[in-house]
Image 1: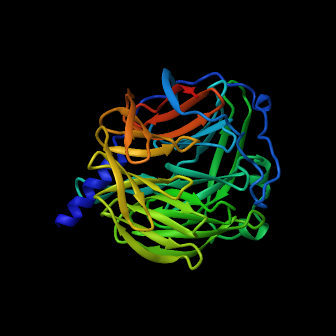
Image 2: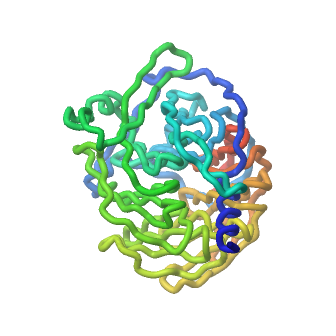
Length: 418
């Protein structure tokens, strides 16, 4: 019973408070006016989109905060490779908003058709009526052509071809249309400021109960999905040319509730934060099997990696972040944060770490030194901040943070200092 109550508590910490706040529409710019990503050749056959090369910098200085409206229950945010577009996953809004970074306007709204599903009341310990189509996290693959989205109560993920909506409509083979074996989800697309509408079906690829984080290998050949209530990680092999574009090839059991995932392509390993315990599960990316467990502090939620292979972890319950050497499992250094650190992200030069602190309504910013973290800023962010992404150019760094209970995005701008 004690273990069960602990897991219930952890889930409530992650789920946050539901919001019934309305959506304030933002005037949009025509989609055709947004420049397409620049494409150049790379050594990876399936990775032709690369971000621009940025000038080096040593420090950052906070400048201002802008507030944008999204939809109820915004859970996570994700930039494309060039930083021109940001995708906001609106869990309670059953939608994904595509923002234009320069103008801060919403370009497209992807809205899922609601169908009945089953959720769970963790206070009363019983199932409750809910909706299946609640976007949680997302991942872009194949040169930013496919947006993979985890749906909270649908027990799987869906792919949306964001480069070509027509491709979504023409992708379903006739044999699949006449079959009941492949589940699909209806998506309606609107363009704020216009009367244009689109709609299509996308395949639901079953992974496990309550899918959360989606990560991919650098070549986009494999996806990993952490399944919160199934206590496992699904490994999917992708195929852009064969519907439904991915299939599960392995299911890796983990000790308890999994959430954050980071892929180390250089060493063919993946690391999974076991939020329901005190370990990082190590997966072998050749055999797609669990290799070992790295003992860490309690309740690790999110995990990222720098170019040297060091891991950075947020500890939700302990209000701490840590730098870990994965080869030895040694914690190199830690720092305290405001209450309930959730999503973390590194700057493009891997020298700064941004942390959303949920219940304390704060975003903490740290500089990563050789042997410690030094705090750069603690910025107020109302509405329980949960997801964060970073945009950069040569002079400016922007941290885009989504707040769950207000359904809003805060854009924190920093000046780069050489």
